[in-house]
Image 1 (cartoon, rainbow, N blue to C red):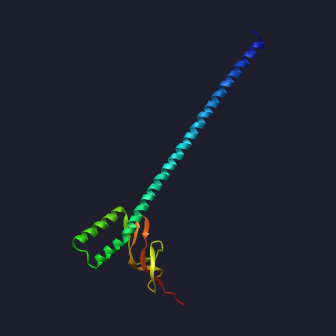
Image 2 (image 1 turned 30 degrees about the horizontal axis):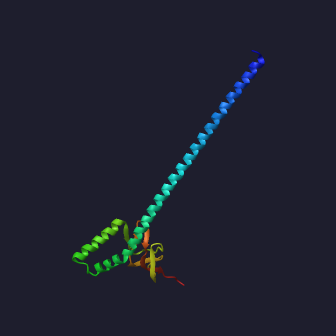
Image 3 (image 1 turned 60 degrees about the vertical axis):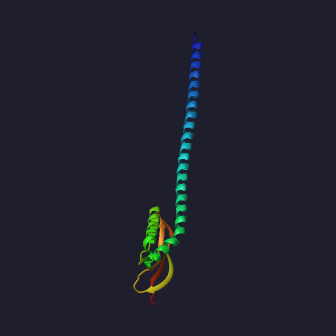
Length: 167
């Protein structure tokens, strides 16, 4: 064999090796692209499921809060009847059962006084001034407030006392 034939043969072999390497690199790039697409789709789906679960939970809580807020006047009536000694016998048992059920569902009553006035949980119905307080204070609860979990569904209706202003 001549040297020219050997060089041409080496060149053909080198070209063939380069072509196979290019094909392999191309196939690896396709696999890497498909893998990254799959990972992106999996992440999008996981985020979608989290969002749907969060929205479903929020919808459920809002529905419960709506139903419980409709029961608040009944709970107020039961409390007033109890304060006046009108709940006895079977009616007392029904009242206790209703209160137990709404507490079990997550409804809680808040009615503390005196506490600093907080417009997020208090609704001021009356206003007074006094030298006995140093900041606006809910001094009397006129109607209790209710929370469902951490969401206020009815603010406590209160009498507010503010410090006297000296002129």
